[in-house]
Amino acid sequence: MADIPFPHLSKDNPDAEGVVATWFVDDGATVSEGQLVAEVAVDKVDVEVLAPQAGTVRIVVAEGEAALQGAVIATID
Image (cartoon, rainbow, N blue to C red; front, side, top):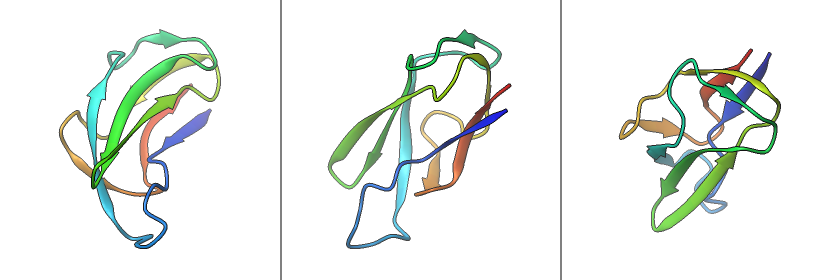
């Protein structure tokens, strides 16, 4: 199992919240390692999030919801 964390994007404010802007996969989808799974945003910075390994995605933070940098937004089994 691997966690997909919200990336650290704000070095000036490590406790900053961001938003899961878009999920490109559905909960329960099978993904390949390196596949684009989400886009997240902090302030005016948008970043793509890739799957760290192949497996089944379990979404923890829904699209449009806020999360702290470093928080788990999904897992892969």
